[in-house]
Length: 208
Image (tube, rainbow, N blue to C red):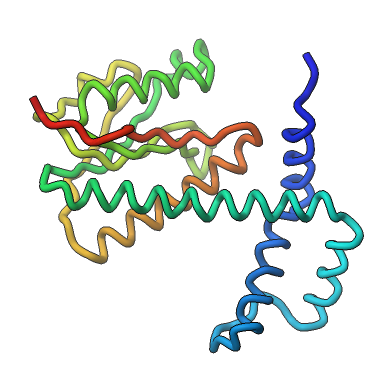
């Protein structure tokens, strides 16, 4: 099976760290052009040295710009979806869904993603979820912000442990959760060059 050239290029760009470099270069230009009173992401000499990459690796830097642009718009869409969940008037929960050892061993990442997606679709009115990994042992799990249909019971999640806490709707909570899930989005983008693992409801559905 042949590799998709676009995926190969994207993988190389990420491996070389060009996404971060292109983002810093773009931020440097934006701040200086608009004469903003903000801290620059690098010194002027570093900017001049790194800017040469646009001539040395034109295709790679162009791809890095596309990745950053897609990531930016994905974060905006994610924030909008979370905002709609918070403003729905329904109860909001923050979920953590983990997997038993046997499930992690005997299923693929894509299968586990389907488990999470099906669970959220069956038990929630609207939702945004993303893959994450434990800091110590890199254990796969999912986090989600959801509106629930009815009382959510842990036993409904058959593949491991389900932990949840009710979210108190306040402005600082909204920003905190949005920032956290956006961070997970960036993590998911790095995890795979072919797709990200964000799961979200297509549209809000009325509770039955």
